[in-house]
Image (cartoon, rainbow, N blue to C red; front, side, top):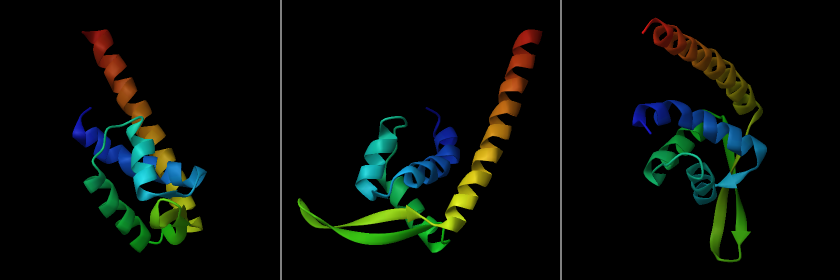
Length: 107
């Protein structure tokens, strides 16, 4: 998949997935990778930025497999931002699909 497509959609995917269930970084990477191939090196800087911008908050939970895990949770500000991104994404994909269909019909 085109890397530019992924970059544009990854933030929205992260917010949607965390909104449905608090997740720790590795878990989130695994869940997203079921749908979109990503590098963990891309995900963690984004999680730090989203936390700094107060769209996410974090907390630690003990783990049976090792050290405590840092979980990410969506804040109210993050939920509002996610909903705005969904509206923008839907409008964008409709416009792109319409453009493609019109041009394909011409050709």
